[in-house]
Image 1 (cartoon, one colour):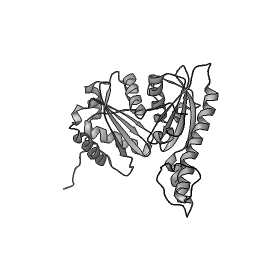
Image 2 (tube, rainbow, N blue to C red):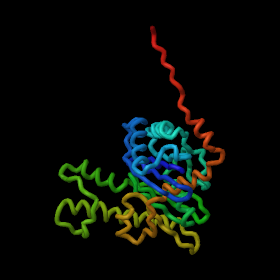
Image 3 (cartoon, rainbow, N blue to C red):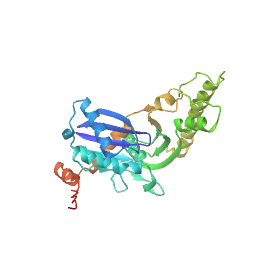
Image 4 (cartoon, helix red, strand yellow):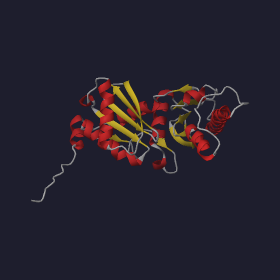
Length: 280
């Protein structure tokens, strides 16, 4: 089986593929203070809950947008699975033409989403990922990654309002049902949620006008934890696909697995021996 890791700023999402099927998925909090041994214990507990054994994992691919945790996660994988993971980097074959001024600056998660969305839905399309930041990515009819927009995520916006305004409380992201509100909590919820809907609609509309190529319709695919909340208030989003990142990692793995035999990835994973000599 193939295990995929999507390491984000707020969460790490894991997916276990049994051949072409996503059989299991888990979400854990990203914690840069955790050691590799702590992640070994946590990941092993997730597997044990479903009676899965580490040795059932044949290979691993990792996509990370958190440099400070990337090595920790790779080390945890080597310790638990005795496998050296395939990591998304500038040398990874994504099969997509990245038309960015500097392709190395594009977040791995944005590329993974674009690859999976184009593979599944074709182009042209716009992918909106509601994560710690909300990203908008444009893909042409020919499958080229054209670029996009990054804005603060909904939770970041909500937390900033609470932290910077002394009298405003922390709130739950729940729709109040109206924009003329009679209390502070509902007023904040209305401003953040409906205001964000307006942000999404405006950016998508502008991107569609720049992306328009003939009469082919431009579909909008949304992913991320809060995609359902926003999609319920707008007709701008055509498709919600919560597993698009995991499926994208599976696609990219297939494009880069040549030469990754079970023996080779295990041999590479061997941790260096540490010889400690005590003075007499």
